[in-house]
Length: 451
Image (cartoon, rainbow, N blue to C red; front, side, top):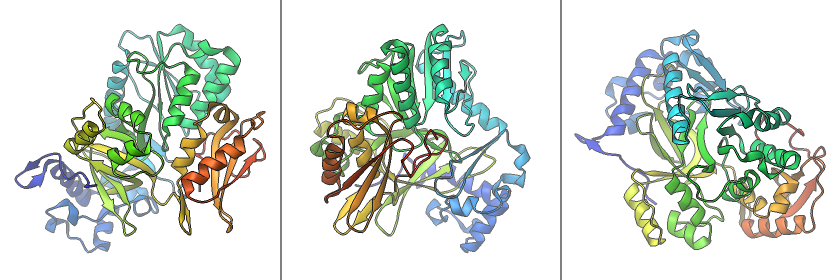
């Protein structure tokens, strides 16, 4: 598969690259940490004429030391908001948002809310169920922030939500699952009738998860007024909602869950379909970085004026970027009528995430896909799991929901599906909610670690 090369060219230089080079030069002038980074790589900023001459940055190079040195002008006090990552990788990154950037975020979020029926006359409740104090700025919706407190979120949805025309929820996947299951158990199937959309992200999301959670909330298939579960991708340092789904991409992914469909769409069958996104080319310039192991990861350069300029920043997500004409040709071969007008980012998951042994590989994404494939099994599990290599082959450890018992055949069904995905026999262990040794019971503040 050939990676995306350019959105357009101007005098031999890509238009996106020109904007990225402006970010590079501003950072080279104003951020002491970036200046030191360039010097360590022997780069003279004045001699740089193309983006591929600029060294990559990543979480460790930017955030391992004094983050103030990476801020243009070095003044963290100029920030309107600071947002930390989950620290899942062992190193926290920080999003440093200026007042101007925050206003731009509000405009972007309001545009998304308007597409779902919101307006200045009110009537929209935005439930922010994201962890770690993440804010969702908006000027056209009432915001409730129950964060990751399930009891509060259920009461807010059922009681306060009844007074609004529409409810929109932002949450990480496993919290939204628990919210839907708890509300359904306590209030019956009508609890979600005012919910028009749920935005999830923070980790790779399986299509089987989307179907399962859509059933909890009562989202109809292909309803424009209630689009249901929507996936977006971002990062604390890069910003929320960096990569977004379109209706065409969502429909395409749902139609390509068989081996032949995946082979035609993305050129390979890993046992699961990648997430498909587009992005705002005025906000970020995207590239792929090919590593020594042959894996391509997503690299972004933030465009526009930012307090912390990110230049060729490796987000460590394994991706392919497919030009629009190439992607449309694949859609035509699949017999699909939808078409795209911009390049497509296919996200496979985190780089180096698979568990691998002699002749076998087990991707966490394949496990997510199979865990939600059977509603009865999905309802008994939290969705958290851990992959381990005991030396005698791969192990898959699962966590039951509080008070749940494993249904007939759960362990056998999961073991057979996981073994087929890995190419070797997988041993499955099913742990009680509080006995699960890899994640504290009730903790939705921290993301699960799968490997």
